[in-house]
Structures are given as structure tokens and as C-alpha cells.
Picture 1 (cartoon, rainbow, N blue to C red):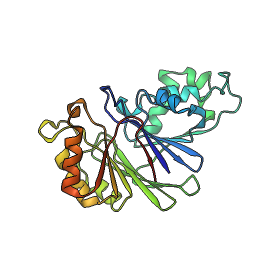
Picture 2 (tube, rainbow, N blue to C red):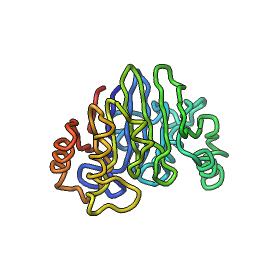
Picture 3 (cartoon, rainbow, N blue to C red):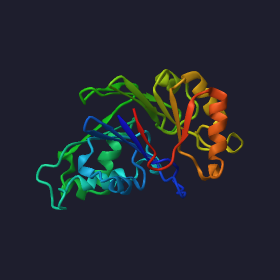
Length: 258
């Protein structure tokens, strides 16, 4: 499994981080986890076409995690030459409670041409994955749990004896800790330093406690707001010294091989 962090930040772009998205590649399959603004451009830079994606797993509906889902839906109606596709590949869009109704509203009421002209129902398979397991792809198991963040879910992907957990946005949450126990890679948000923490997010101090309990082989810290600019090495040292867990502070295009 190869993991590429397409966007390691928040809605506020910085020099090395833009909005949230991950690309997972497993035996020829390509999955997105979250699809924030800039995701399609990052895929273009990697040479990955929208038509190559098999599925998108959304953690919640905030724009920095979801907004490029709309142009992705539209792009699937065309072939690689930009002509209307006669038989577009099916795209799975998987997410928390409300995603079925949200995509239906977007494609039928807000932008009805997606349904009326492009007939997006032909190539969209939208479903909710909440506290359950998805095994539509041979050799890949995706498990989800709800977390404390506005319709939020976290995901655990298991394949080939390796496991990866992606927190999305969340307060420290016991359900995520249980989901992530013993994983190979934990990709967890750390939006703010503890003294600046606002909203339903996780700080550095809280992340140390999570990592000590989960005990992943590798921690990748992501969803960093601009408050962390210039303090990345300090954050890394704090977590590694406190937990003994190897830590990477993610930037856009950080890539891991599991």
C-alpha cells in the first residue's frame, strides 16, 4: 500500500500544505480519503486521472475535506479525450451519515444538469459507512467509526497484513483509539498548539496521549493550521520524545510505502 498525502493542512493554504486529502494505492486500486480543494490539481501533478479512481472515502462534509468531490463527479462523465463517456466507470463515494442525501441534493436540485444531462446516476454508487466494514474490493477491508466532529467518521484500512488509520477531524475520541490500536500507521490531525486549541480538533498535548495509547509503528501528523508554521520540528520532537513513536510532520506529497 502506498499512501500519498495530497493535502496536509486546513482550508488556509500555506507554502507546504493545502486542504485535506490522501491517495491510497493498493494493487492497482486507487482510493481517495477526503477530497478538499486542490485535490484534483494534486492528482494531475502525480499523473493520476480522475477516471482512474475507484472510490472516495469522506470523513465529514466541511469544505476543506469535501469540495473537490463536485468537480470529480463532473469529470467522471467524460472520457480521457474530454468527450462525453458512453459508459463511465463507477465511482464509489462513501462517507458518514447524510452523504447519500447530500449527493442526491447536489446532483438533482443544486446542479440538476449533473443528473439530467450527464446522468451521473449511471456512474455513482453512494453509501454511508458508519460503525461498519466495507469489503467491496478484494483484499482490502475498510472499517469506520464515528468520531466527535460534525458528522465525522474515521477509517481503518487493512490490506496485505498492513493497517492504516486516518482520523479525519476530531476531538480526542475513545472510539478512534480503539479503532487504531496496534495499527502500522496512524494519520492523525493536530490542528493547533494546546494553548490555541479551538473547535472540535486535537492539540499536540492531546495527540501525545492518543499515541501513547494506540502505540502505532508510525505517526503522521496532518491537518496543521498556519499556527504551526515554523514550529514543526518542535512538534515532532515533543511527540517522539514523549511517546517513543517515530513521527512525520506531513507536507503535501509526503509519501509512505507500507
